[in-house]
Length: 248
Image 1 (tube, rainbow, N blue to C red):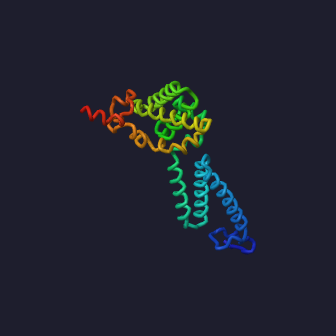
Image 2 (image 1 turned 120 degrees about the vertical axis):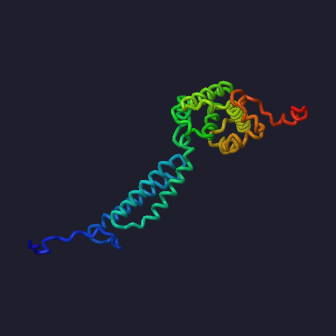
Image 3 (image 1 turned 135 degrees about the vertical axis):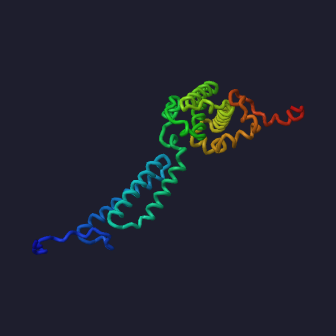
């Protein structure tokens, strides 16, 4: 079959991995894509640096890296190692912030409502979330009422999650009483109740876990006992010398 005159068939633009971006029909598309990705990446980075938008920005960056890697591969450019490294780094940062999911995306009212409805999974409810909720209940209600409401919500969440034995009365009451005392002292000193951010900044010991602060008030065996899990036990570390003196 005769091929005919090649001049009748216009050459297709070279869209391969050319060293320059200003060639033929692909140049404008390439430059436009670079500009679009550059702008989108800047927006994603800004989101990623904002505490309450960091997860949105992180996923946005991951999507940008994935699309960029795909475009590289489609154009025969397989050197996407840096994009993979960037993506893994962003993913690691998102993973470290998982325990801040509820704090980042929920207002105080929605956070309390979700807790009382037991509408989130127990495994997503971490120690800082316990402390934040305790802070909100101690701010919003008189001491006894706040403790009653908080404990009911915590028991309900544990039951819905299929782990009712997770509720520990001594640890729960002890933390609520510590929060209540520190709120009262701060309020008396400043003439107003602190915000959650202010409270969290000034009470980092409460956020480091039950074993960090409660060991100052309880001997190790007390909190590990089944009795302390079911019934509130008064702090006993200061009573230890007296017990030892009487041989008990």
